[in-house]
Length: 138
Length: 402
Ligand SMILES: Cc1ncc(COP(=O)(O)O)c(C=O)c1O
Image 1 (cartoon, helix red, strand yellow):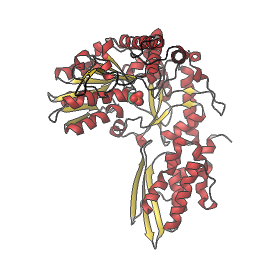
Image 2 (cartoon, helix red, strand yellow):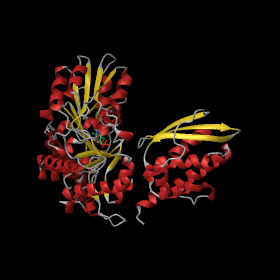
Image 3 (cartoon, chains in turn yellow, blue):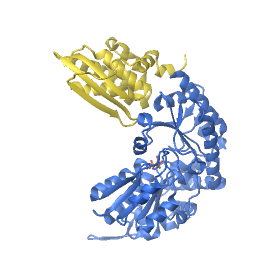
Image 4 (spheres, chains in turn cyan, blue):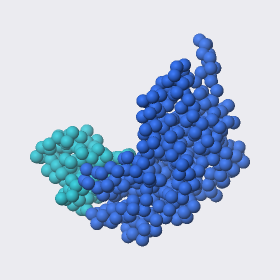
């Protein structure tokens, strides 16, 4: 196995090739735009809430494989969760990226980003979508 | 030549040999510069121009000699050479020290769309402080300055024109001599950003007739944290000191202070002596090669890279094709791969390049560059054709993976 697959795990490559929940929602309650000024990654995230839950969410954006795959994974993990659960997942994800903390089981596919903490230049890419979500549900 | 640069024999943890192609960001240092700095701390270190003892004299002599070396290198007089921490500080010294006292609401400031943020934001902020007009000159589609538009935008109200002699985004050499003529005919001053040009081609401040010129030591084999502000003698009257304090005074009384003459007046506090000496040592190394030869070498690598890459599928090259407008910077994108991912694949092949907006968002926005970012390989004296070959191979690897 070559060392690049440490960064670009198969799951990440799959999400960047086929991003899930990519596009616009017809009706939504919240829209957040965010950019990562150090490298220009951009994301726009739309969310539809129902009964304190994330009923649906979609994103559009432009950026590197890490930032786009991370956004795709985030939308998959978050769909259907309560706002409270979503906050908890966000915190866990951000802690995993920053501290390299062993991820909890419930992070699902998002665990493939656990290596990113070894690549300080890519942390902002991997966390952009999650920061956008955090802002949307704060 | 590579053997003069210890860091260039680095082997990455994955066993790949380092190929350093990020020279527009910063250059590596030859052993002679490293040892010169080490010698300073081993046998010369004292404070400068203050301490009347053996070491104080050694330091002062070395510091003054460094200034002489810089002056000679750019064909300036010694007292026109002010040491700063780098290009960014030099430009801010002009914006605050000359701009604030001399620009007023009715004036205009002109910059080019292709300026580095360090030669853009200080002028934009000065214009905002003064509530004066801030004009950004549009580019041609190849990224060169649209000279017709430039000549249209300059008026008798223009006070300052800021322009890089060589851009860091695409490595374009701008016609500063021509710009300088127009600027002075209109009674404005020309501020030249030499951060990229001074390391890569001969510099003669009298020939280009710049009123100010800024550059950084770290992009020309010298240490980080040292740079130069050249200020034409006529400008020294109207350039106010930006920092005040020790070392820049003539006489201090309770109620007022008179300042020392240039350049001391602009160097408040203990200067970066190590940096100045290191820069002088770097200049010695560059002079031995000859600045004409450096430009020719960079161009030959550019032409070699350009000829190889122009036929590579999915690769877009930015900037003009005419070699006389270029130096050793190749800016490119690979269709469908974000430049950050390109840089990561290249890195796994041992190749260091830069990716991102290169502190030059206005030009990328103006030219509608994909991703608002590019990959950039930049060559310097120690690079050779085998480095270009490695780059081209690694680009093929990136295409296979994405
Ligand atoms: C054209 C240009 N101007 C200004 C700068 C800023 O130089 P420094 O970061 O050394 O102050 C750079 C370097 O990135 C540059 O390439």
